[in-house]
Image (tube, rainbow, N blue to C red):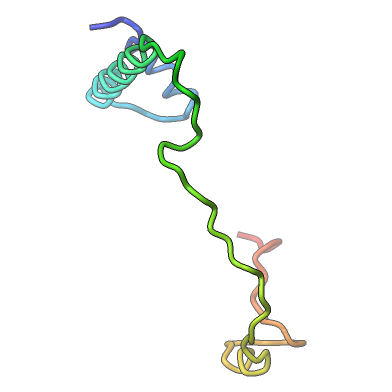
Length: 100
């Protein structure tokens, strides 16, 4: 196995990410990260000089539609169904500035 990443490296990264890993989780994370790094090394070893870079593996087109105004719901009808409304708007309880 490669020594690209050690359990100490994983502990350091976990601490930076504010994660707490148990011994079993540390062993699994180390093994999985080591396997990923080995796979990335395999990819780095490929000769890709003649391969054109791409942003997506398959061709895609951005599907856009024309922005056409359409009928909307009636404001009074919508507000009539609201639990509380005031001045033509939904009335909601405040959430900022409340004491816990």
